[in-house]
Picture 1 (cartoon, rainbow, N blue to C red):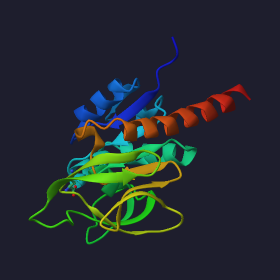
Picture 2: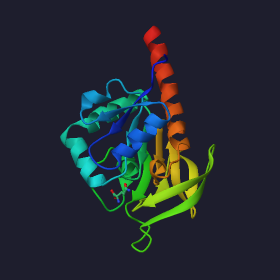
Picture 3: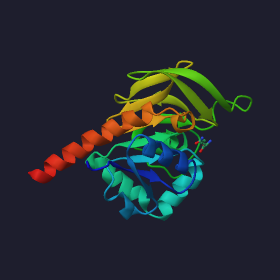
Picture 4: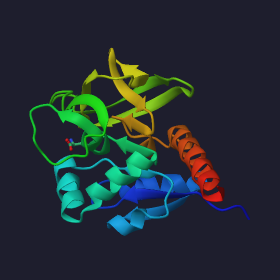
Length: 202
Ligand code: GLN
């Protein structure tokens, strides 16, 4: 049997279970990440939606933030949804909460307004096509820099972007029964595993 691809899911708070189910569905092996050493043998990390202040605080408390930054430097792919997207952004407008700040993005929390703070819409995603976008008290990406690539937009604002080994959606494919975004991420992780294995053979 081929080795299943191990993907970490940051498991402090938020929709951890939904990401785990999604990973199982597409044939990957999910690993819950609560401590730095849990990251040792994964080839990708998903940062779920939830409450970004809580997740950021716990990530710092358990020193998982440093370990993620280290793995990011080595090239490990990271996918952030919603609160995960907020934590990956370099600037969280109007907030100095703990974060990783790995993607060249300015983001504003809960910026769709009170009336429509949660909604569903049809998105068009580059390389994937039409897909349902579920937004829950979602942040808005206000600015991107240094070659961040836009993969999908809603009302002229990016909702899915990629910068090298970082993938970000402000919506939740794991709540829309949409497997293709996670498969896209799995491809990134697969490529990374191949590179790591080649390096080991040298
Ligand atoms: N509103 C949350 C925050 O600002 C994010 C919501 C979500 O992840 N669905 O942290």
